[in-house]
Image (tube, rainbow, N blue to C red):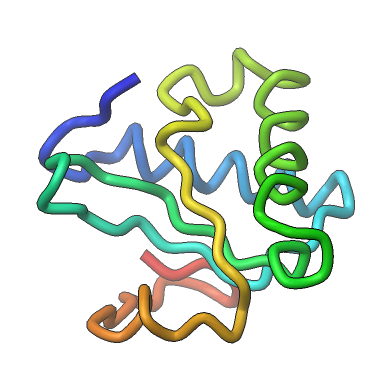
Length: 108
């Protein structure tokens, strides 16, 4: 699914629900943020996980996909193509991001 040009409440809520499910299923997510990509003009939920470094990005995507498939009704807006996984020490994607703090563990 191609997400909208504007980050909206439904997208934020779907991302938050996915992160909560990943946490509940003991999946190791270090950080998450919605990032806008000028090309192809869409939003992607970027997740950092050490699995990218220890087992490779394919394993990290499989981990996320397993949760998306197990609970499809909880995040109808999200497909795997809407998600990017990176290693925690990969600073390049984060270089120009300033998160907006809204709670103890989730930043919007």
